[in-house]
Length: 167
Image (tube, rainbow, N blue to C red; front, side, top):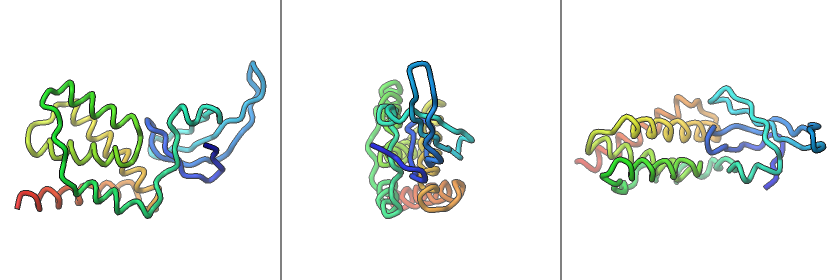
């Protein structure tokens, strides 16, 4: 897929940002074009070869109209995660690596519920934080809110979902 300057994009490992420019750079085997992507949540600027964007997993950020579906996923019934911590962490890591917004929401939902049912391991807690941070950053990018406000919305949504299921 080709991106333009100003496009809101998501890198599966670094999170959301936008294409600030497309530059031509001369390297050993000729001139190549690069996307310059600002990732404000990481304080990072990525220079990614145009031809490697798909391979790197770059995608357009979700549309603002998709936010209700994300919140609905967070409110939904969780999938039970494997009891075996290695299997659970492998499954969660695989979902996070996709960088897909609905997978991120699923990770946040399922690990938050897991935390309510049983103790999370340190790695589980790190994975939950990673998923929540990536999800909040993308929600903030498309809604125009701050990451902090998006994080609060995620937490409020999860708290309400858990309370309604326990009532």
